[in-house]
Image (cartoon, rainbow, N blue to C red; front, side):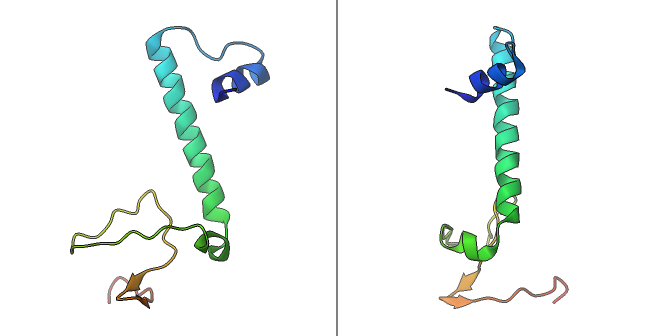
Length: 89
């Protein structure tokens, strides 16, 4: 059963109409809600819990990595752990 049907069962009526634009807008809202909810849970978890399920993202050049939708757990350089430094340093 998909999320739309589950929501409609809880609400007791169809959550959206039948037009394609309404369905697309509804799906975007549900996806956004689910991502925000998952992000909230991940932000609450301790690093010790996350470290066993995290992935490594290598950076091959000096352009850096956009981490706006990620939680930074650990940074390595040449297989050595890095320390966080104040921005002004």
